[in-house]
Length: 177
Ligand code: S3P
Image 1: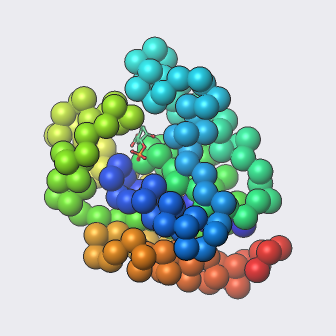
Image 2 (image 1 turned 90 degrees about the vertical axis):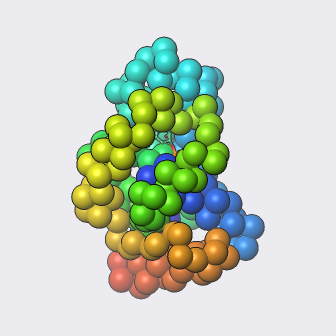
């Protein structure tokens, strides 16, 4: 069963996924890395050369390539919910956990850790905030679980995500739990 972490940029998906890998010894994948490896190009380069729509196509293709029956933790890019087929696939594969945090927290974190892998930030804060607002209903509709990522340490979030995984497996069944 997959446990897919979704949520806006800087919501803590990669940090929590890494911590899950360390503490729960689960296989961790990062969707942006999968896309970049396949494209042999970094995220900024893909946006630059091909545009956002092409990045979304690559994102869905990367999801489709991941082993459907594997037990893994997947840190998704913040925009994965903009592709309906991707949302459907994530829900089919297992539990989807939304790491949510208020805009003020996300913006502060984004300001403190500016990275080239987030080309959308070049659009300016007003547009970035609008993106978040537009995506909130998509995160809500895609996720089975919502966790506030700004109110707990990564260690605590690890145990909450594992609880989500267990609850999901009990409810929907899983070949491995
Ligand atoms: C994006 C988020 C990024 C990356 C790309 C697009 C988005 O991932 O996929 O820059 O549309 O929100 P993170 O959420 O890991 O920063």
